[in-house]
View 1 (cartoon, helix red, strand yellow):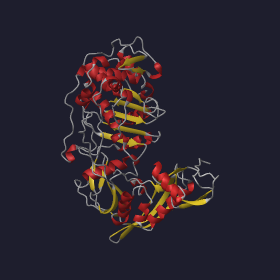
View 2: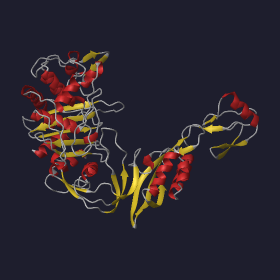
View 3: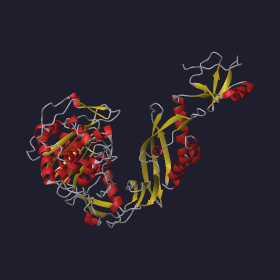
View 4: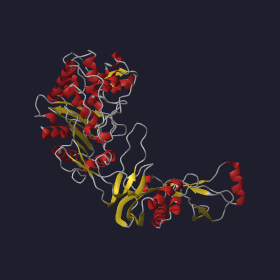
Length: 556
C-alpha cells in the first residue's frame, strides 16, 4: 500500500471523486498514491469550509486505469468520434486534427480496433480497416500501440498523444492522404537491368522510396491512386524524407530508372547484415564513385546512408592524411604510444590500457593505439582536421547528390580535449558507412569521387568535388599503413587471404549508455571499397570486419 494523508476534521467514511471514479476511504484506510490538490492557505481554507479536500492520484496509472483509458479512446476512434477520442488524450488539438484527417483525408472507413495485452502502461492494438476512394476499396491492416499517462494537474489518466498512435510510421508533421499520388511510381533496375524490389532486397525499401520521390516524374511514369504518408517539409538545405505508400488502390504506370547497384553484391550484402543484430554496410567502386550495394539489418531508417554516428578509429585514416601532409610523421618514424595522455584536463586511455613504448607510427596505426594520435594535438590548429576532411575527402559540406537523401558527415571545429577526441573519431565527429566507404575509396585512388546511386546524366546534376587532391607521397603512405593493418594489425583476421594490395582500418566507438561500443570497419581491394558498422557490437575487427571482407571477396 502507498502513503496516506489524513484529512483534517473528518472522522467518518465518505466518497471521494477522483478522476471521474468513486473511491470510499475510511479514516484508517490507505489511499494509495494520492496527493492534495492545490496548495497554500487559500486552498486549505476553501477545502476546510466545504468539509473535505480533493485528492489527486499520482504515480503510474494502474492496470485498471490503463485498460479503461485505452478502451475508451479506441472505442471512440472506432466509431468515428474524433472529438471524443481526442478528449481522452493529453493533446486534444493535435489528436483531433489527426483523427479527423484519418477519415476525411485518408478515406479510411470500417475501422475495427482490437486491443492486445498491455505491458505496463503501453497497450498494443491491431487495426483492421478499409480504404475507399472514388468507388475503389482496399483492405488496410496494421499494428500500433498507445501509452497511458497521468495528467499532472488533476491525475486523470490519458493517452499520451503522438502521431505514431495513428500509424507507427507517422512522425510529427506527417499526414495520411488518399488520392492520386503526387509522384509516379518507378521501376528501378540494377546495373544489369534486373528489377529492384523491396521483396527481393529488403534493405532497399527506403532507397526505392527516395528514388521515386526524386525521379518519379523524370522517369516518365503516370501516378496511381494510393494511401500514402505525406512527409513534412524538409529544413532549409536538407532533402525531404520521401513519402511512403501504404496501400495502392490503382496502379500507376511506372517509369524505368537504372541504378548503379550490383545484383550479386546487393544480394551478398543483404545476407551479410542479417548475421548481426544491427549492422549496416556500403560497397562502392573507387574509380567512379558508383554505389554497388547498400544494406541494413533494420529495414526502416537507412543508417548506411543517413546515419550519424561516431566513427571511432576509422577516423584515423583522415587524421593520418593530415599528419602525413603536414610532415609531422611518416609510417616508419619512431613514435611511442603512451598508456595515458593528458590534454586540456582530460586523461585519454588506450584500449585495455595498452601502450607501445618503442615502435613506429605504422605499428600504432595497425594496433589502433589512440594516444599515438592524440599526442599530436598540441601541434595542430583547431580547424586542421575539419579542413582536411572537407578539402581532401569532400566530407561535411552537405553537397553530395547521390540520388536519394544522405548524411554527408560532420567534422566540426573543436578545441582542447574535444579536438583531441576528434582525432580518434569521437568528440563531435559523425559519419556513416557511405562516408567511410568513400574515405577508403579516396585512399585507393588518391582522388575523391562523390558516391552516387543514379548516374548524373539522368538528371544533369553536378556531383560534389573536393577542393584539392592528396599528393602521391601521402597516398603511398596511407596505403602503406592500411595494408600493414590488413596484413598484421587489428584487421588481419577479417582480411586474411585478400592479398597484399588490400588495405583496411578497424574502429570502435564508445556510446554513452551502451555496454558495447559500435564496431566499424572500412577497407579497399582493387577497384572495390566498403565500410560497415555494427551498433553495440563490440570491436570492429570482430563484428563489421567479416561483413566488409566477405563483400570484397564476393566482388573480386
